[in-house]
Image (cartoon, rainbow, N blue to C red; front, side):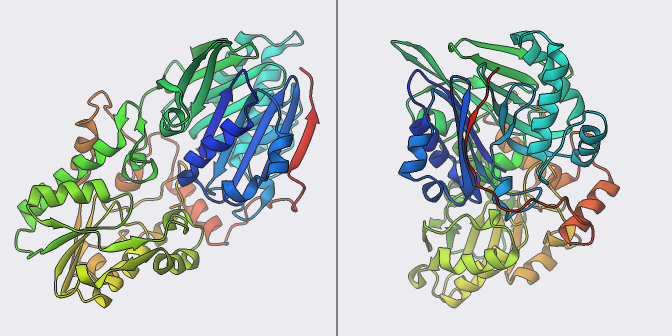
Length: 506
């Protein structure tokens, strides 16, 4: 899971891109990067770390130009520790292209072979984003056939990307001297939103992963990018769009609504905050129906994502709602930290329990999800240490039993707490007196109650149904082998300088 931003402005765009990344920091904390375009020249700075740590004043001064793209990275494929895999990526042929990507390709290895053997292109990292960039570059080269690049050529190239690339991808890219390009996979799994700002010089455009990055900077949300659609803003600011995948269908990732997106975002026409309120209502109905024997004194959310669900659940059950955990906001989101040791260590650094809200009480803790169980186990023990008489644990989403292969860091079944376990076994594993999960039909109904036009979701981590149709048992086994170190991954290159000033002409 990553955050992407692309902006066309009539002014220097570096500060806008930086502000956009700050607003999307929750989507990735591993690395950050910005590329701006001044005429036909790219200016790049990227490195490992949080946005505030990656960019210094001297870096920002070098990022000149009125068009740019930016990226915050949460590693899912390739090396988690190599600055060479920070985005955006750059290629100089055929025109000079930079690209940032949110999602995950499911046919990366096949594409790597095609690029090397057939397209005569070299991929320098293990990142699927670099593969995606080179596929786009090759398709552009095929579309041009020696003449000067035209708008139709760009849309033809994106159609070629859709034919070749499988999986989830929302993309922002720039073509040197030509303009800003954005597109979304034919299933619309990963989000992408367009915004506009009218100025005396003419309209300015922004494309971002979430609406919060648009509205907070003074732009007006126009709409979501449709599945399979490409958006092109030329060097003068003229916007055009085209559906480049005739068989596109709309299946957004439901885990975006559960966990990743900020509550103040509107994604695919759906308020994240309202969706989470509805999740709490449906979960309350299940507790009334199936767990009425539990004697609950107080409902406590696990900050921050679960607050709307916990609040509405408490209201529907007529129970007290209390903030029992104080959060240290300088610690990153534990779910997206690479590695169990990092997650476990961070839980007690991030949260502190207040004995006043736990002592001698039967407490219902509410979280958005239970993935590996590391965080849940630590939190339940904290509640017991604070004096709770009984600790029940409710999840606003169903049991995560299957790997997510579309850009969320849960690729192996062995790491998933719910895989092969009953609810009672899960409760025992994390030290809870009872575990209560949302039912999948109720989760879907909760989001659809806010936006009934969404007919189908990618809920593969809950039901094992992969909407792209190409995820097999052999594919999952290979992913697990790579994750466990039994199968080698493409090695990342050595650390290299990440500041580039590239003179590129179209």
